[in-house]
Length: 171
Image (cartoon, rainbow, N blue to C red; front, top):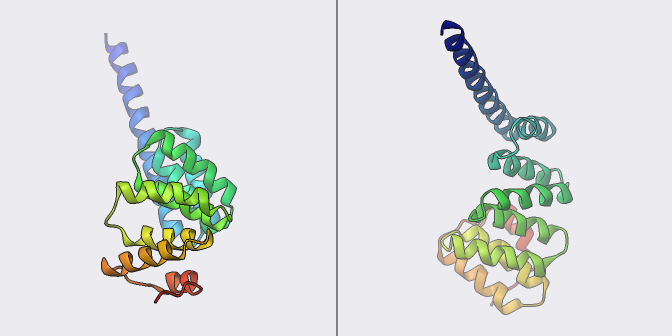
């Protein structure tokens, strides 16, 4: 009986250690993202995925790092997995739409950005991104509507957006 107890105790301690290791790798990866050590962040998130391939947060954060590194195909692969694990994430649809925009696929970006807006209609940042996609496909009116919507929401136009939206002129 004692032996069974120690086997169960050892198993529980191993599981706890495994979960703490995954959590510490996630935290480490996020800290590296903040410090702009993107390759280090990718390595940490990859280790998490090797240990447990069901952690959507690891795929999402690795995709965000890949996006920053302009490894857009790798980002798309991870974002597709994110949507299999959590199909209702507006943030994943938004990032996937952004990646598709950067890859020169605005029609496909619009599909994801429309879903992101349905899931989170109060996020002006998504409207800014959709504005770019609409402009790229020649829908200036729709682009201007999205730009106006984001501004009406009080969404700040940071330098990031000013650079990306500089070609779009609305009356």
